[in-house]
Every structure is written in structure tokens, then in C-alpha cells.
Image (cartoon, rainbow over all chains, first blue to last red; front, side):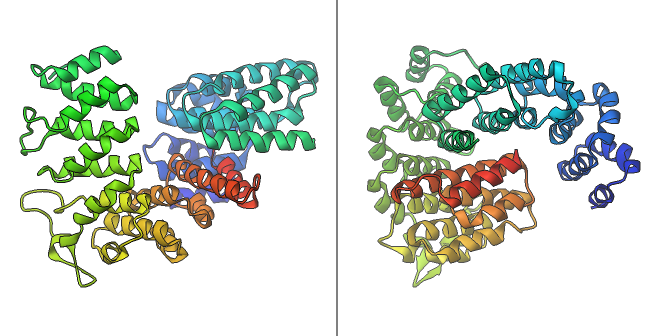
Length: 188
Length: 275
């Protein structure tokens, strides 16, 4: 409860404490701290990035969720790696979702297309994940990525991937979510 | 203790059919279910294992039978139905429980009457008897696996005799009570039973909230979507429950010849927010 109150203050002064809470083995407190850090946005990213290598696994997993929630491109490499190779499915899920909601305007325009290509490459891997929830997050990310992409080749790959998930994924949740995504693409 | 071997379908069946190493048999039965090996020889070997008398646990139960019964639910072959129904008479509580769960998965209505028989001593004149409430002396469980039985009857659509199910709404064990609520919702479509499970999402114990989440997902009670999304539990579990709602809702859409109804979109929107 104390953590939840601290998270609600939305003060940069709370950042060190909220980050510390990520390292405790207490999911309830970590959820509250994660939400607080996401709400603080970019100011939280710097301290998190500076310390992330020292974290234990649990804290890293929560930090990935914060990065995914904020969408700061400085955390992109961590998200790409976590989405395709973390052993925990809930971390892969959160990282995958985060790849579609990067703050594109913060990426220099001359590297934007290359960065989006890199993200799409990773989403093509997560589209094959054995866990349905990671594939579901992939669909959501592809749908979010599509309007941000200007390269027509990339747009085509996104659409084809969504069509293939809609037509041949064994899970109803995935085929239905892909159907919705494709419907929204068509609407522009 | 036998080390877990790398199995193929052939070696798993061979392990199951030998009688020297009980550990290998136990593991092979689990393995065949885990990988849903849909093979006539595997099916026969698992059905044979349901009457095994060699593998006996310190508590007097039959570990191999329990594993074989669980695996048979996953294979989805109706030839397992009658042998599993016979397991409902087994003296081992956990074999009966596994059989009830597998009969639910197989979805064959021939299981309804035998499952109802297990409830008859538990209900008298619309009330639960001591047989329903008491635990077995020196054991950690009730006389019958009521939770599994009630869930199976709900899924199998046992509408012919609700008087056997309704009294369990008052069972002192929360999970048995939830199973009754779940079954009553499935059998009557009455929202008041779904709302009882929604209420359970506010419970004090995380284990019970998780249990209610899974029950709501299993019955696809779409009106619980908002309550599931904001329940105090892990997002992973909430997402599994929401997936249950979504699958159910897609079926409803198909019946109404609709594509992506408002409810379906609402469920997906909430799921997106839980990722």
C-alpha cells in the first residue's frame, strides 16, 4: 500500500525507491511500482538504464515492463532481445507489446526506417513463439507498427504476416485479433 | 528414482508396456498425454494402465492409473470414455478425480449418469449431507472429487437433474462452491450464477481469486470482462481468463452470423491493455 501511494505521487524523487521495489520479491508492490515508473515516463528511463545490468532476474523482468510501457527508444535494444529470447513468457509478452509502441518521433528520421526494419525482424520471430500470448502481443504490435511505417515493403510484410496469422494460427484468440487488426489496416 | 528419459512415441509406448521399472511407466504415461500422442497403440497401452495393480503409492493409491487417466483426456479419443467411466468406481480418490476431469475434456454425454451417481449420497432433500462436507479420516480430501465432478457436469450439459448440483452452492469449501456456481451458470444461463463468481474475484485469498478467474474464463461469462481486467491478480492469469471469454464470444458471434461484435471487440481491447 505504501508503494502504491508513493507511485501515485508521480514525483521524480520517488524514482530510486520505486526502482528498488522492483528488486523485492513482491509482485503486488512491483506492479504498483511499475505503473508509477511508467507514468513518470522518460525521467525514469535514465536511472533504470544505468542500473539494469546489476539487477537480479526478477527486477530486470519488471524493468523490461517499464521500458515497454514508456516506449523510449533508448531501451529498444533491451526490448528486442527480451522479446525474442527471454525465458519468461510474461517478459516476452510485455517486450513484444512494447516494440509496437516506441516513441517514433524520438528516433532521428535518417535511422527510422532501419530501426523499424529491426523491430519487424524481431516481430517475425515472436510471431512464431510457442506461447499464444506472445503471438497475441505480436499481432497488437504489428497493428500498432503499421501506421508508423512509411516503407511500402515493410507495410507489405506486416500485412502478409497478419494474414498468415489470421488464416493459420491454431488459436481462435490470435485469428480473431488478427482479423480485427487487418480490418483496421483497411480503414487506414 | 528414474531419470526422465528422452522419449519417442515408440519408446514411450514400450516403457508403458513393460512392468520392470515403475518410474519409467509413470513418466511414459504422463509424456503420452503431454504431447497428445494420438496413436491407437498408445491409446490401448494407456487404457490397460487404468487397471494396473503393480504401481501402488504409500497412501494405497494408484499413481500410474492417475497419470493414465489424465493422459486419456488429452488424447481426445472417445474409445477411452467407457474405461474412464469404470475408473469412477476406483477406490483411489485421485484416480476418480483424474477420470472426472478427463471425461469432461472428452465431452461425451455417456459420462453424465455415472458422474451424477457419485453425488447421490452427498445430497438429501435438497441439502448437503455429511458425506458432502466431511473429509475422509486421515486424508486431506473429501469423500468425492466434487469440484471435478461438478465442473464436468456443467461442461457436459447435465440439465436433467439440477437438484444434485444446486445444494453445492452452499458447500463450505470455496472451490467446490465455485464449481457449483460455474456448473449452474453453464446449465441455466442465469447471470446470477456468473455474478457470484464475479463477487469471488474480490475475495481475500489470491488462490481463490485465481480460481474464480479460471472459472469465469471457462464459462465465457462476457459480462465479467471488466471485473477480470481489474481484479487483483497476475496479468498472465487474467489474460488466460479473457482468452476463455473471447473464444466463447466468437462462438456466439458465429451463431448470430456476426463478425467481431461489440462484446468481442471490448474483450480484445481489455486484453490488449493487459499485455
